[in-house]
Image (cartoon, rainbow, N blue to C red):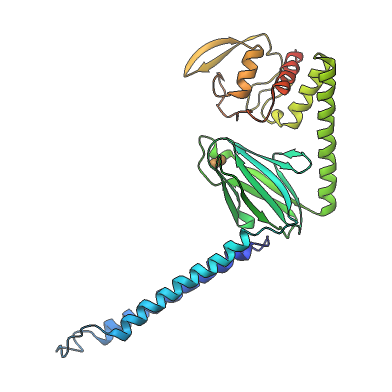
Length: 322
Ligand code: CUA
């Protein structure tokens, strides 16, 4: 509970301990005084009321001033921690995070994208948050940091400096729809060397993707598009839910669907559709429009993630999986 895995942990631990400690102290003190009074001033001991008490200025001032000071103490202590959490070091590594129903996308300054966050240990990292649809909240319990991503609101960020290598959970802490609870990610805290080699691999993957895209551009379609589609399917994580060999995962397989008829649920009604360019495009951009019978409506929209050209490449690739 009082872990100190990040540089800002104490900004939360301190005030929490202070508030809990003060509350426990007051609870015990007040209870003891109450018990003492019940015994000391019991009617059996004091059968005759000798004097009625009407107010006591000093006491009243004391019990107003002391709680006020305590409340200000809470505020001040919390404020100091808040200031720290809102003052990222200038040299913090910048990562842009895009939230959407229901996934997180992390993008580094060099354009490398990743569904999970990879950071070097003992270096400050600043996450700049943006939401494409509804309010989400980026939450790393281990580091005691949390920040809402609100659509249309800029300059939302959080920062931390992890001080221990390891993998930590990332949650969405704002109810954002059906799959809110599955909107998970990870922070991988690595040594600088491991981080650099991870970044190098990712960079190469990104360049391969760019090369495939360029080839597709030149070739005006055909094989270039298919290989671009293949690279995209791998790099965007599509294969986590859609197999390319016909096996059924969370979503339907890509293999052998093109040109065939399939049963989908549209607005709660069953209907037959033919898997063509238009159907695939709609399934990528508005995955909830038609749900293939037997599957759950889990897929997040790729609006803003994939451009037209990339979707064409995906269609070409799916077409090629006979
Ligand atoms: Cu995103 Cu809850």
